[in-house]
Image (cartoon, rainbow, N blue to C red; front, side, top):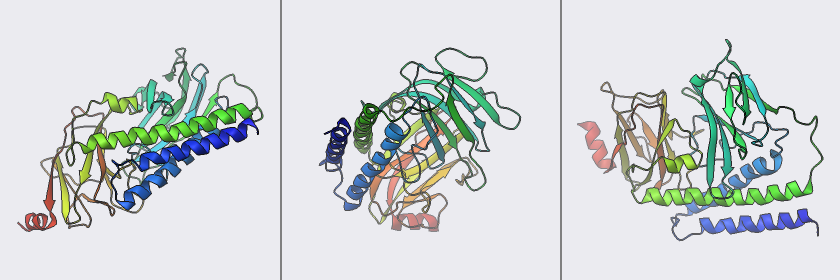
Length: 362
């Protein structure tokens, strides 16, 4: 039997082992949550194969979406367009393109260790206002270990991926940028498939699925210790998993009956961007294509005094800023404050729908 055949068998066996996470006794026994868990593993597998098998040649990188409408990791932002490219940290790369009209852009180089310990160590980053853009939004960025003139993205020798984040305020009217990446001084054409590289890629893909699923399962359990509240958590935990340095992440776990609502009150700080989103137990955003499950600085209705109230329940009670629980009675949630001057944690309460109706009639 060839090494590739053995690698395939090992890959399938490790995927089967990842299923033990979904069967863990601490996972809610709700059939919906468990079904979503196994779908989650299938989605992670799709993303892992893209990253570690299809896009794993650092001599010929290209940008691909590691998180999107049907592939979600770690409270993926519904407003974001994520682009990843696999690289080798001791090589030099050129990123070119045009930024489009989305109001937030960042580019980060990470040493991705999801397949090892669930971490993503940042080696360098550039925010939108740190970049020299051309008159029509065109840009050239050089990524390397050696400092460069102009737009320079710092790499370290173990950097393995470059991530571009772009955020919508108004998805209907804004357009994302278009970017490409190339290695500087690389070979002219890719070599034929190396069987050992395939074997290594399958192994890393299986580890990725397990590492990601385990990391965010542990996070959900941590948030559950403060159910229906936003605990104050050291941001270092989120940075270790690849969170952007200019973003403050306020995660929560929610649990409400079908005749209850979770009411969230907060005064958004002055910031470049913020969003609120509802996620399932596995920290996948709910299906924002078809349901009201997210709000941001542009779409939310804020009161005249600057305060914001979000109401989360099964059906719209006729209020501003309603969030659809999407057939669930528990899950996770997240508020991001981006470039904020301070980071308020919301005040929350659970009320019956009858009580909520009385408040609305007063």
